[in-house]
Image (cartoon, rainbow, N blue to C red; front, top):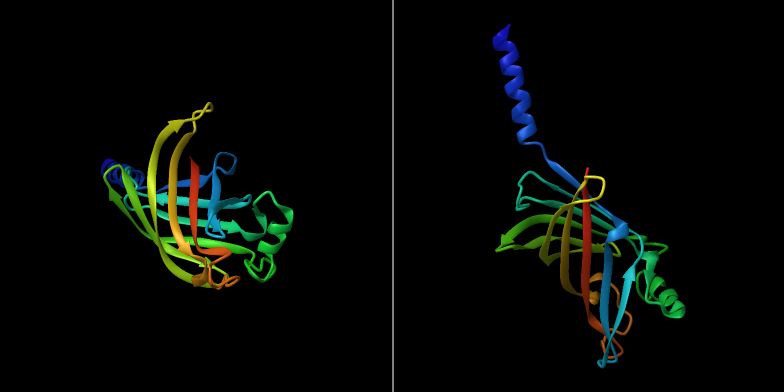
Amino acid sequence: MKKILLLAGMALFSLQSFAQSVWKVDPAHSSVNFTIKHMGINLVPGYFQKFDGMLMSDAKDFRDAKVDFRVQTASINTHVEMRDNHLRSADFFEVEKYPEMKFTSTKMVKSGNDYKLHGNLTIKNVTKPVVFDVMYGGMAKDQKGGEKLGFMASATINRLDYNINYDPSGQGVAKDVEIKIYTELAKQ
C-alpha cells in the first residue's frame, strides 16, 4: 500500500512539474496599435479597442510559448470618425464580413533576453506567416498577489497581402503597416 501511495504521489508531483502555464491578456493594461504613412509625409496612428489573447508555456523562459491573439476589426479607432467608418468599409477591413483578425504562433525563438515570435496572421480570411520581434518586459506580482507578465511585440506587414487594396499604389495610404502590441498577461 505504501508503494502505491508513493507512486501516486510521484506521479502527481511529476504532472505538477510539467504543468503548462496559461496566461491571459489583461485588456486594461494592454494595447494593439498601428501606424501607417499618409501621402508619404506623415505617420497616422490608430489602435483597436477590443482584443483578447492567451499565452501557454511549459518553460520558465517561454521559449516554447504558444500564442493565440484575436482582434475585433470593428473596434478600430484613429480618433477621426469619418476615417474610422471608411476603415470599417469594404475598402479596408470589411468588418461586417470579417469581424476578427487573428494571430496563431508556430514557434517562439529566444534571442538573448528577447524573442522572435513566428506565426500566422489572418486578416480578411487571408493567412500569411509573420515574425514579431518580442521584447520581454518582465514578471511581477500585482497588489492581490497574482502573477503578471509583460511583452511588447512589433512587426511590419504589407496590407495588400491581406486584400486591403484601397489605393494599391500606396501613394496616399502606404502599403506597409507597422504593428505594435503591448501586453500584460495574468497567470490563470
